[in-house]
Image (cartoon, rainbow, N blue to C red):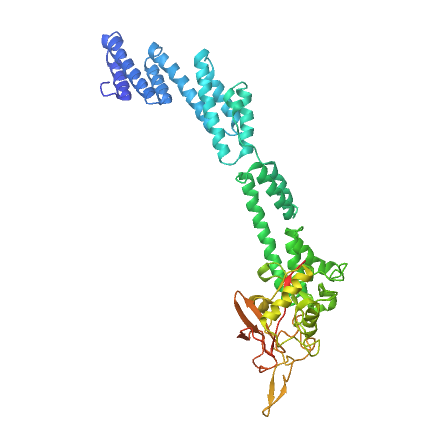
Length: 485
């Protein structure tokens, strides 16, 4: 007993009861009193160590040795109640909607017999645990579960101010609508709803973050298929292009770029004519320039048709661009000179590329196009020119207007020819190699691309590039480009 070893003391006490007479003073008085004191002490210590369940079990063990002992009975009752209340608080702190009924039973058992201040104090502790649990669920982003659990808690504590006044974040009503649009392959509509949802519910709303991540993933999948379609378009593989496009549309049916490409396969393709006679350069014409005049576009410029353009799919999945089908001609340039350009018309065949002008003259012509049409024209950058002129090929051809020598004499590439005379690439751009080499501008760097009639045919290809000062010469001309309508 002195060592606090209850079970050893019980064993020794039972041995002594067998060996001594039942009316022995030690058996009748001293031993029971000492045993009771031991169990009372052990039960009290467990209670003080915040282990009411162990305290109740110790009191119960003492009652098995000393049935009906008043102090042990009181301790057992008291610590059973404390343990039940702790169990109820613990249950409240981990409650879910699925185990809420079990929590209710645990709470009802623990509250049985409590009245007045003691009952109120217990209820407050349970509600505090519930509020902590609800807040924890809310911070985890499960707003629906938190609000549903709060409604259940209010059925148990209908008039509790802490629960009634608790402000939990509500589930986003937009998230389900965004999900529905994603499921319906309407990603553009989903994106518009997501923007509205972020405005109403806040950009940091977890529901919206979740559907936003899902939306971006689906958009990326669709754009991957679309890029495949563009690649197949460049290769001229229409069957594979259509298959890749169908995969993109199955994910993102309301994408305007996809819809425009889809019209290639579902209807007649042709540039739309405006009231002034212009033909709009639209994305659905991308890659179709080789089909002929119906797939070309142009602006009306000072009462006449401006440079004929073909639409080329955007680089790296970017926006399509429109590039002049032919080198700018003498006829194009002279129309500028006669309509406020401040220059003298150039002699020669109107269908030949304009050469013998400076880069400043070319820039003035391009600025006039922009001012007259209201559409921004410019020289292509080096990368844009390579992309549009290459169309998946190096442009080598025996038909290019480049120089061929035989016996010390030139038999080909003797002079410039009409811009319509040379071969066209897969996108409908003519004479990108040979005839007149063409200016490109990247930042402040001016270069001439593609070679001219003066270059050996063996060197003539898209990759042929020369630095250029911008001075006038007989071999250098240019194309123009612009954005799409």
